[in-house]
Every structure is written in C-alpha cells, then in structure tokens.
Image (cartoon, rainbow, N blue to C red; front, side):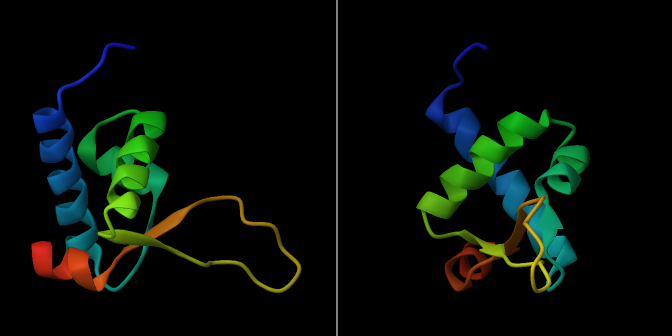
Length: 84
C-alpha cells in the first residue's frame, strides 16, 4: 500500500468526522463509515484510530453481558463535535 500525505489523511479524517456528525447520536461501525466514504475498511480503521489518538472520536460499547465485541462502534467526542 502506498503512503499518503498528512494533508490527505487530514482531509479523509474530516470526511469521517462529517459522517459521524450526520448520524449523531447513533454510533457507526467502521464498516458503515467505510461504505459512506467509499474506502477500504482497513484504511478507515487506521483513520478512526488516528482520530481516536487526537481525541476526536471514541469507541462506543455495544455489547451485552457475556458477549464478545465483534465490531468497533465509533462516536464523536466533545472535542470532535466542536471541530465539526
């Protein structure tokens, strides 16, 4: 996979934040964000982890008692809401 510039990563991250903002307050899976952005799921996961490191998004727990988490659900943080 080729490397992308920091500027391009920032632009894709902004699009991901916009997608989460449109669905607020409902959290979205990595797959749902990838479908909306027309990007690969693994790449979108890296973008979401990048946003999580910067405090813009957080993981939302969607498991019931005794179940393992199968998918990552993402929601906007307070910092992410202010950025959008």
